[in-house]
Amino acid sequence: MSMTSRLVSKMLVLDARDEQLPSLSRVYGEQNVIGIAVRNEDLASALAEHTDLGAVLLAGDYDGSPAANEAVAAQLHALRPELPVIMQQRERNEAAEWPLAGRQLRASYAADDPEGLRTAIDEHVFGVTFPDALVDGIVEITTARLRSLFTSMDVAVEAPSIVRDRIIFGEAFSLIPLEGAWCRGYMLMQAEEEPLIATLGSAAARDREAGSVGGAGAADFRELNSVLGELTNLVWGAFKNRFLSEPATGTQPLVQVPLLINHRHRYISFGSDNPQLCFRYRLSGPGTARDVVIDQRFVFSLNWSPEDFDDSGEAADAPAFGEIDLF
Amino acid sequence: MAKILVVDDSSTVRDEVAGFLRRNGLDVDTAVDGKDGLAKLRGNPGVKLVVSDVNMPNMDGLTMVEKIRGELGNSAVNVIMLTTESSPAMKERGKAAGVKGWIVKPFKGDAVLETFRKLAG
Image (cartoon, rainbow over all chains, first blue to last red; front, side, top):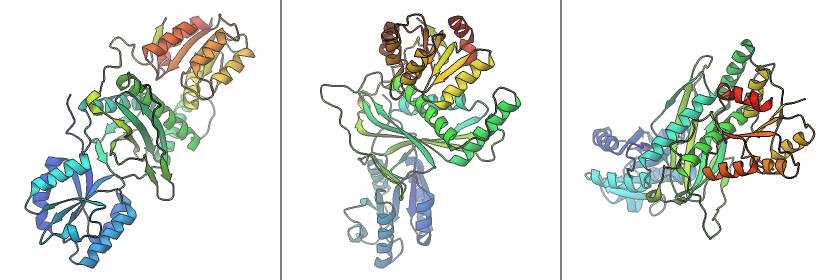
């Protein structure tokens, strides 16, 4: 089984020395890291803007003074305690002195040791492996279902990514359990209201002009909810049929843990530190001022056994979707 | 009197399927889950074809079919499942309950219209 090496991860880079960037960029490229350089004064706004991060890469002498280091640590811990911090040590053993040593600080490496950075990223960001066939299969089944629901729109997919953040973004999201012999967890689909409602309104207007449907006025959030729910249902069904042919059953009752959602902080926890496997689909087409962005996340928080991964569920002679199989 | 009953908890699917069938001249009623479908069928013996989802709240589609055949004693109405499910075990359960056919979502009206007409006739 081939494990994917194509996943990317977005990371904040807190490093004031521009001369470091070429060597860091080389490692980032090899490690599929999308680095976002941030100056200290912009840290809060960068954290607010980027809600899908994999880690923070921090220079030990980032802001030069112990007090400034404490301020950075306090901000990171207050705003995003779940993000792993990986520190590059410069003059001395800054990692041991850093206020979050032993907590949010997961790894450190010497400035002249790029291998140390590679190891830290592999272990603390990507950590969990995902089979290529799973990643490819998710993209395939989701784009096919998006095209079936949004027939007049083009669907583009961004590079799949690993996210350690636990932020709910978008404005509407759906959540559905995935239960199989080799994995157990959840799928989330998230979207912003305005572009999707505008798209649904445009489609309804076209249908009315064509005389194919009657009366209803502009789309509202309930219609958006319904469409997001149906998209989730379609993708969930296809995922189950293809990847979860072996049910998650045994002699013991299945374990569950509470999900925790904090609306004020737009935070969701699935009860484990497992990373989220994320996909972003961008829909564009006639009558849409803004692209519709659908974020899809998989969190295998209850069981992840990729060594038992099986994508042979969908029978080779199964009828294509939409066609009737008469008994 | 409705000839086709579309049962699905998703209003998107109900609107899509019922809208397509109405535009093609068929008489359609809708229900939001298996329990509602069973009630609509009780009150409308003229229904000739039920098109139903499987995974629904309150009562799933296959349980509804089993109750149509059992409790209602209605062996005449044709039932087609329209669902994301495609597992052989699920289909076997459908067959055993007297389901006539199985469609894996998404719905493609043109691919099934003639069959629907025959079964609702």
